[in-house]
Length: 88
Image 1 (cartoon, one colour):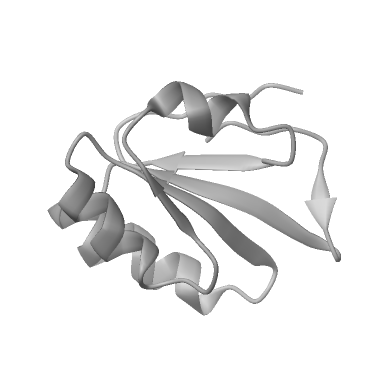
Image 2: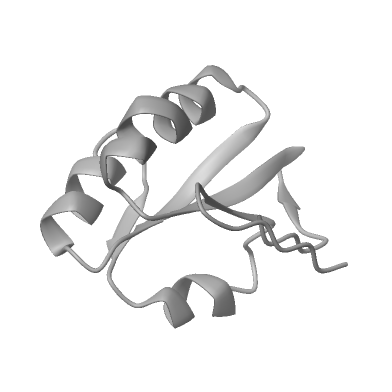
């Protein structure tokens, strides 16, 4: 997870990094259950997987460039099944 001190309408703005099997089995269902998180980006090296994941969330953008996701000034949280990074 990559944290920044930004929220939208009282909700964390999140990006999903990695849109393969683990994301569809674990991350995406968990993110969809949360009413306090808005997913803005879904990122994967496969554009097809990124698009499929982004389609699960209203207004999410599919990207293949990790730097685009992490450079977003409005992003609070980046979720990945393989790494956790906190930045305050």
